Image (cartoon, rainbow, N blue to C red; front, side, top):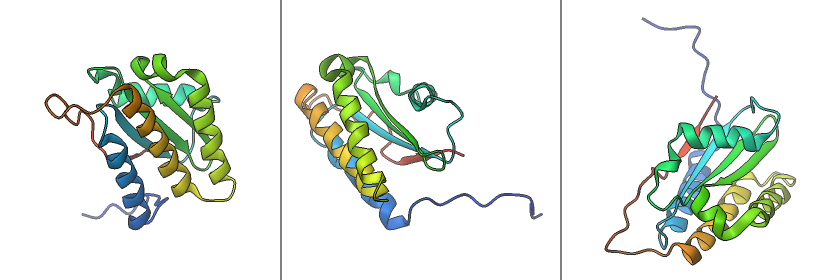
Length: 153
């Protein structure tokens, strides 16, 4: 039986663009025990995108990384809101200024409609920060979280 009322999922990126972002995540995690996730949705159900990012971070159980070094890049496309949220372990190392700078860099790309570049570049920067503070250890490191982009509503 067909469901004629099912809405078609909104596609924000082409398959090639999704691959660019996913590759950036995988590359960022290649030299660190840290974890990066990207969450894209249409609208932010909160006034403050950071509050929504914290909610998504918890929903995705990103706090379960062994070294508390998970980072979420959150984007609400239609509401033009974004945030970068890092768990306690990485936040203690880089501080608020790193997150604020990351958001500013993404915004500079977004203002010229270079969404994929903005996300991929901030993921790269996050990966470098994670590598600096949580270097990869071949004997102990495992990929604790999936590398795919998570799409909300």
